[in-house]
Amino acid sequence: MGHGFRSLIVVTSGYHMPRTMMELAREMPNVELIPYAVVTDRLKGEHWWRDLDTARLLAGEYVKYVAALVRVRLAPRLAKAPVGAETVQGPAEPAARS
Image (cartoon, rainbow, N blue to C red; front, side, top):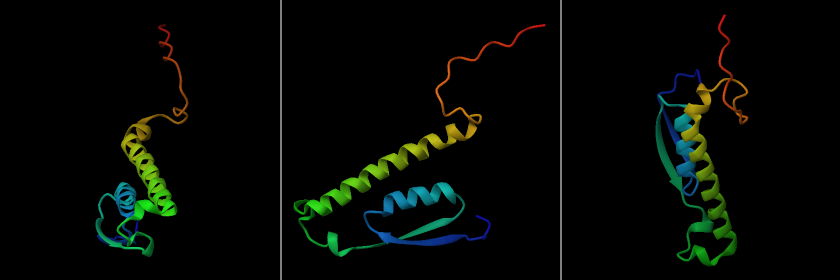
């Protein structure tokens, strides 16, 4: 990002905030992120777990958060890997001596 931002107010649903902050911090490491979570109507009730649609929504977000966490944690290692290293390869052949 070449826009020169020093800070960014992040506005999203409260259940999106952890993943959003993690993803943005990865993409903009030098930008101060200021979270501003909003509460959606779906999560205002005390017993959200009794509503199947809301429970599915939160479970899906949790799965996406875990996937993003794995991606962020592996990103430095993948960035150092040569192109095409995403595939599983056996050990490299030793260089021939002349």
